[in-house]
Length: 114
Length: 115
Image 1 (tube, each protein chain N blue to C red):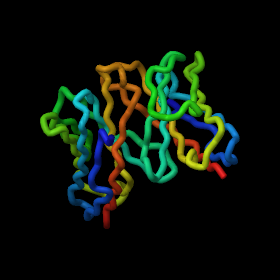
Image 2 (cartoon, chains in turn purple, blue):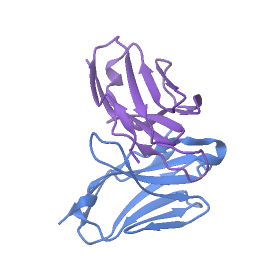
Image 3 (cartoon, chains in turn brown, blue):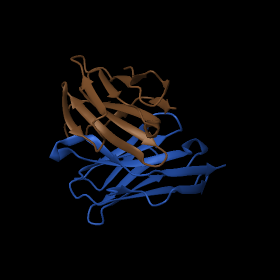
């Protein structure tokens, strides 16, 4: 099976702009979660989607949003970019949300905000 | 509020010896624990997991131990190989509380295995 794919891999934006990142989960996986990794804060959970519904949400401002489509592909959007949004954004997919479901990660999108 | 803690930012081990990476957690709702290996600018790679109904899980050179009363888990790598050098993250979720899609990560431990 193909793994989790993320596009684009690298992105440079300026403050105030908005950005949309895309994630295609492993075939058959219905849950997609998003994480932000920064040197200071480590890996932090953003939100999780299952069957096009947001199931869980982390402690990020409303500028961070996401959605999931009927084919389980997911996008996350960050509006009014700030310098502190520079990070590696990772998505992960897993199957049914039963106990013992493992999340598999994509390679990430490296976002640099200037 | 750091619910998952890896108190050792780095660990250096000789090739062939055992590597022991430790992780502590505070949230008693956590019922599923995972270890991931990560290289810079790449996504984490899943290594091994353990459910809270077990206290040990083995997969080849990797063994994870869970001590629920101490809220502590550890990853043992035996024997350690230079290719194991990477940052290791432990993660936890509260699946029975409908938060299986939300992993809480520790800060990571950088393992260096010297030939």
